[in-house]
Length: 166
Ligand SMILES: Cc1cc2nc3c(=O)[nH]c(=O)nc-3n(C[C@H](O)[C@H](O)[C@H](O)COP(=O)(O)O)c2cc1C
Image (tube, rainbow, N blue to C red; front, side, top):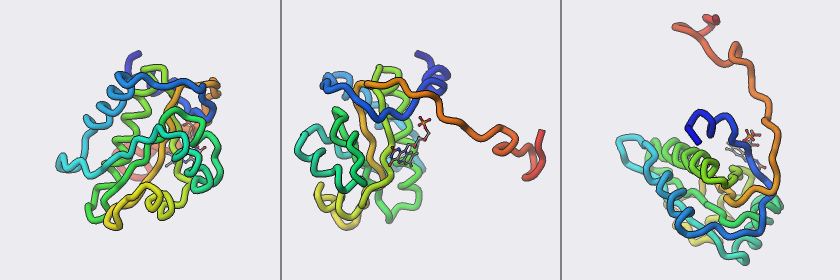
């Protein structure tokens, strides 16, 4: 799958097959995260990779009872460093790399932004100087969601100056 196809066909997946991800494939997905660009190449992010069913179950109530958090094969918990100016951007790019790499390997992902970051951090032992930025589910899709709508280009793009449309 080329990048253009991956970008155009990726969807947020919230239903997953109960199927383990082979370690070799998980490794490639994590490698795509590691290769993401970052401000001054500081790579100001860390990622907690959770496979343990008990831990995922404990996380469901901390993620607004979103059940797919435990139904996915692997839950990724992205940790930022609030002391570093671009950490959140670095972390975001890294997660986006994961969505595309996963998709082209037949895996689905979904960002999880609705969660209690203090409680998730506490459960996972994240130190006080770091902060949980987002979670992401990963697993084999058990649904084929329709594309969600996007704003029209005219609302999004300006050419040369703000307000100049084409
Ligand atoms: C920062 C962020 C947080 C999100 N949080 C959640 C979430 O908590 N639960 C959920 O089901 N989807 C969540 N999503 C997924 C969005 O709802 C989804 O990306 C959007 O509706 C577009 O659909 P698509 O990803 O299929 O194109 C989140 C996405 C982003 C980027």
